[in-house]
Image (cartoon, rainbow, N blue to C red; front, side, top):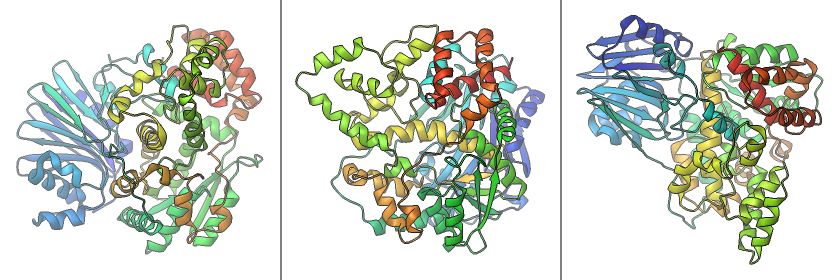
Length: 592
């Protein structure tokens, strides 16, 4: 896991080195730079596989150079297929030689997480893994093409680039920004599964969307799911650096940790965070039950209000874009402490909910979609449009009766009408569809279980959860690995009957696998989304009251709408909405 950075075209050497230095947190173990006429190629390394200096980057084979951020877990099998002598034991060398043999098609052979840049024959090739686990940003400005693992390096080289007020609606919609867009109009993201070619001052991109699969009636057996998941966990235990696992006490992280303990040759440390005095949020007891059952070396950390305020301040200063997920704060707190224990690799349970239908709203959506077949729904459509309610259920029925796309990702926070009531600008109905237009057109029939999983992979998982996981863990020099996001496992499940996979109970298929690994009370636990007392701490510290003061400075939102959210949050309602607004302003304060 590392940082990659490069410039194609005439560059300022001192400015390029300063920009590259902003990424040092992603790779504290080694750094390398290649400087050629019209090419600056650089890499910060977090040594995880093959710790020797020979595996440092940029790496050269013949006339080709590579810098890679990530891991290719099947590199040994790929090396055997290539049947070529290798100078190192690294996955980077295998990746470059695979490219030289198979060209752009080589990416279809990779099982892993990666953002890769290859310079060959005066052409730049950029690749991003199918699920967007690793970030890759780029910009074309002043006659150069620049790319980076994080936006901050591009901003350091081009400080005149600014964020856009107009793009705040994307943030309010899904707590983030959807590929290829960012908060900065002049900076783009390579899409998940994307391949970008830059040559002679022009760039072109295509996307390999491995989740668009033909509908099939086939079913997948429990044994097959277990086999693929065990294989995926086994791949992600390959490391020459200390490894651990996140353990919340829920089925997802617990099953990953249980399989890892069985497969790992050394004692496996597991980590969780708790909140003393807030029993309804604190899940440390469940995590400790799992740790005892599987035999991991468990460590829990306690987070209080002062820790929260310190962590969120550091997080806002570090992130290149605002991120509206409050769970990023305890992850920051936890990662900081895990790093001090010397752990460099962490396993996580990300992706299980999207893959195995872990969210109750999926089942609500499937039921509500039946209303689109009502013969006399036009009257209901007019009624809902004329009688506004701030509740999300009102929005759902309005969409169904209006024959619009109902489900637009679990990440959806502010609906279009809520934004219209909040912002000092007009937000038209169904404006949020513009952000997912490409996915709607690609999928063709945006309804039903297959659509729910597809759009959540694209929006909530990639743009919120994985973005959070990468930026927060890498800020502390930790590589996070997600076994549920394995190419073979995901495509196997997406190619079977989605109604079967969804069933009538959340994550039923995964729970069947988990029965032989975990205590029954963990498997049978009712789904409880991760939450913690952030809104209580914001009120207790009076920090949340500053949102009114900050709004006078930035002036984005209507005062009456903010007051509505402030009052409702005291009763536990719209607290995520208010946090997203508060964090946006906190992020902006750090940059003014």
